[in-house]
Image: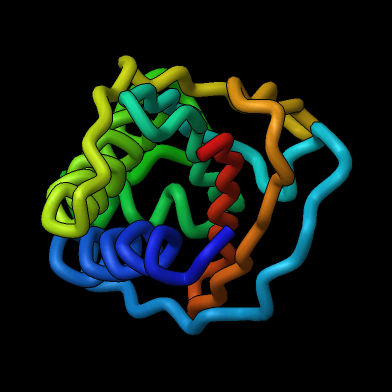
Amino acid sequence: MNAEFINPFIAALRNVLSTMAQIELVSGKPQRKTAATAQGDVSGLIGMVGDDVKGSLSITFETSIALKVMQNMLGEQPEAINDDVADMVGEITNMICGGAKNELAKLGYNFGMATPVVVFGKDHTLSHTASGQKMIMPFASEHGKVFLEMCFDK
């Protein structure tokens, strides 16, 4: 995967959490991912299809940061991951993908987005829609970790 394609997703993730939840993320080292098991506790997964792009993106949150995002964005303080937190993760996934989509359109990449699917629970799995290599990028904050996964055929 080339940086020109990945960087808009990273920038959108950082922008959404910074502006919507006042949470700053520190990037970790990207790695290839071979297992289907998610690194965190709640994930939003969205597919993307276009003439020259087919892929998927997931954002996975540890419980601690998902609950903090919920508190900062909506003023609610759930004690555990619930349907409201799952809805919020779906919306965040949509915002990140939409932000990246706008930037990528300027570079000539055009694609449609599916409705995000949210999965939660310890050791849940993610099934990416593309058959390409999966990449995972960890992000850290004082409230926990977030993991961005991408898989594209392009």
